[in-house]
Length: 136
Length: 136
DNA sequence: GGTGGCAGTCTCAAAAAGAGCCCAGCACTA
DNA sequence: TAGTGCTGGGCTCTTTTTGAGACTGCCACC
Picture 1 (cartoon, rainbow over the protein chains, first blue to last red):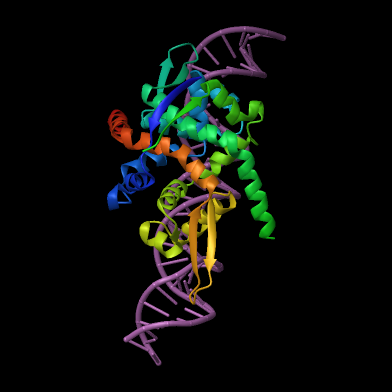
Picture 2 (cartoon, each protein chain N blue to C red):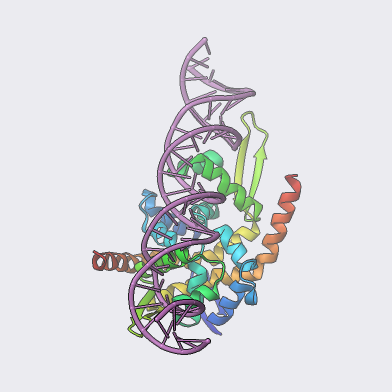
C-alpha cells in the first residue's frame, strides 16, 4: 500500500484540457483517453500490472475475450507504448507481454478510477435499479 | 487546487477486484467501468463537472457529437446515477443536466486519469509514431 | 405565415466487436 | 508413422454499436 499526494486541477481546467481550448475534435487528451476506453484495455492492463503474461496465458486468464480482440487490444496497447511485446525463440515460439514504464505510470492513474468502481459499485447498481423501475 | 492522500491497493488486488476473484464475466467492477468507457462519457462528465448545462448547450459545446449519442450517453449516465436530469416547464420545456454527488465523486477519481493523459500525451504520440514507423 | 429555438426520435449506413474455423511448426505418444 | 496437442495468431461471418442526417410538435417572434 503506497500513499501519495496529488494536486488536482480545477474542473474547468480539466474540461479545457479535454477540449484543447476549443479544438474539440483533435484534442490530444481525448486522443489518449480514447485508446484506453476500449472494452478490454483496462482489464488487460490490470492483468499485466500484476505480472508479465504470454498470449495463451492471457487467453485463459480472461476466458470471455475472443482471440481476435486479445490480439487487437494488445496490439493497440503496444502501439501506444503501454505494453512491451517480446518473442522468445523457443521451439514453439512464445511471446511475452509486459507493461512498460509508461504503462505502469498510466495504470497508477487508472487505479484511482478502478478503486472508485470497487468502492461504489453498489451505489451504481442501486441507481440503475431505481432508474429502471421508474421507467416501467 | 485541492490535494489529498489516497491509499492504492496492490496491483494484484486491483486485478482480483476486476475479475471478481474468478467470476470474470459478471464482475461488478468491470460492470461499472463499462458504463464509463463509452466514447463520450468522460467528456460529458467533465463538461457537467464544470457547471450544469442544457441539452442544446451541450450540443453546441461538443459539436462533433451526434444528437443520438448525446441523448444516449446522457441517458446512460443518468441511469447509472452520475447525472441528474431536470425538466423546467417553460414554454419550450428546457432540460438541465447536472452531476449528482455520485457523479462528482466518480469524476474526482477519473480526474487522475485525465490529468495523466494531459501530462503524457506527447509520450503516447511519440510511441505511436515510433511504432508505426517500424511496422512499415 | 414563415422562421427559428427547444429537446429530442427515427431510419439508414458505416464501423467496431464477437464467434468460430484455419494455419504452420514442433513435441510427445501410441 | 500417424494422431494429438500446444504455441501465437490470421481469416471470415454475423451481430452490436456508432455516426449522419432528416423529421417531429410546440411555441415565440417577426
